[in-house]
Length: 278
Ligand code: FDP
Ligand code: ZN
Figure (cartoon, rainbow, N blue to C red):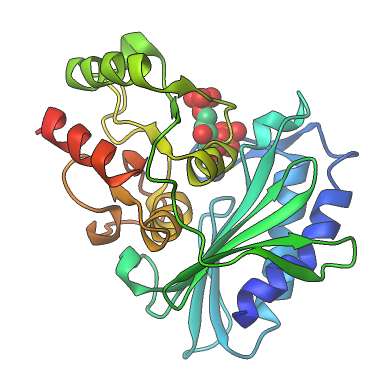
């Protein structure tokens, strides 16, 4: 496993263990203007410390801090969403940690990812990793040790589930008409943590989207920390991703915290979506 990913796996039990006492809001907001939970700050600090301790890493960036921390001139550039879906902490539903390992300075296109992964804090702790052209799902034990449980993971060819973020009246008409078709074909699965909802798509096949909205044309999710790593995992597993026009991995970034419409899942469903949005 990639060294950075191993480090995130090793930190996962500590992050999970630290959640129970941190379900309260911190005083600060993150750079996207969202209220931070004490757990967001805790996971971010822990990951920064552990990841920057690696000699191979030049810089650490996260959704929870304005500027990246640069440790050296050369090496890998790591982007983290320390706790994706952290508003689920109040209601005790699933959440995750997302990591993208880029070999160029951030902001970088998703094509520059050398590895990406997400930890899912569900009934068990798992980690899904895309590296060297393959996706592997691991179970992480209480000591941070990983055991591969699914190798060469691919999306099932028959899609079953869908989950779309944003309020329906805020969906552009083209997206709404697509959603109306999909809801007749697939089962709704939406839990409010992108990473957990995407994992259902990886497991059962289907499509997840947090589309561009009338009130926010770039949607809610962030390209460096969420869109790119997730697109990298889903595409490596044989699926597709799109910002509405092109693969998320081809989006040229223009800012560390920029948002992007995210649609990922079975290729046939993403193709149909692009045709409707065109
Ligand atoms: P959260 O704000 O709880 O961190 O990262 C943003 C995110 O969660 C995604 O995980 C999730 O898919 C989305 O926001 C949920 O947004 P809605 O509340 O608008 O559904
Ligand atoms: Zn997130």
